[in-house]
Length: 427
Image 1 (cartoon, helix red, strand yellow):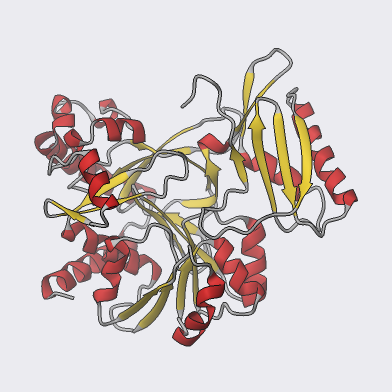
Image 2 (image 1 turned 120 degrees about the vertical axis):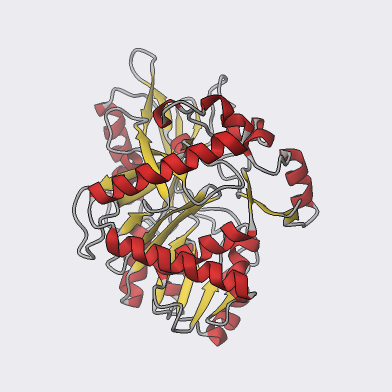
């Protein structure tokens, strides 16, 4: 790693550790975020055409954006003036740099892919920040890190350049059975992988790392319980997306939002539920705007203080995505939202033998549940009855069918609850 890059990583690492030590209550966090927002908005109004009209407006009046807005105004929302089509073409050619910037894309789980533009400095700030939160001893202790994540890019590979961290990548598309021997030989002390991969390794007695991080997918309590029971170690989450680093789990297993790097606002898709959808503003991003960006995620915050002592907001769970919530009609024909947690809990609570499932809305009033082939007919009937009971309480109508057999797919993100059907007025 070049000396200047190492210096950037070290500064970001030390800054993140300082913030962790000094932002000890909500008042301190709010004061810090207020100063960061003032600095960010002044710079964005000066450097990004999209925000020039908001230069003298308070932050609360700045527009809330999303992936559709970002793609439509891509040129006006990055300092280099890069066009989304140019970024897309470069990535299709296997290039990860364009006009002196690093570029990358999301996996496109919800349909359209998202694209990002960052600088070298931002890449190493990201690295220093995540090291400070996930492996706080990384500057003085060596680590062997195994990484199996989708859409690997130069952002992740930046960590291979340091002398303290030996990072090895494992191809999800090839399937863990093809690289299990190489993983065993590497003997990582830290592993970062989707929960389905961690569970697959744990069930075979091959998950032996001291630090286990789940990333890229929702960590379902089903998987967490099985992994922790098999390994005797806590599973910690890394909450990260194309849009930035949003949270890292502490040694107690609690996911804490990265409120020292990101400002969070929230909308409530279901006014009767506890799940929130974050609206994020990233203080570390300069090459491309990530200001009041509406995420598609559904999370539930935890008001209980964490034993680790961190004042950063704890997250009780990341439940899924807004566009995976079911839309079902009630007795009056009005479409109602049914969030993934309601469906998940109904299925899991139906029978203690259930260790895996998929539930999909395939039509305007069709729900298909897939269960493990070994489950009894009685368990299947319990699942159908539990879902019908949930729907009846909300006066919703749907036909529920249950199938046996779940195909394992390591090439796509695991979504236990998903909505494949879209109304005619939705893309």
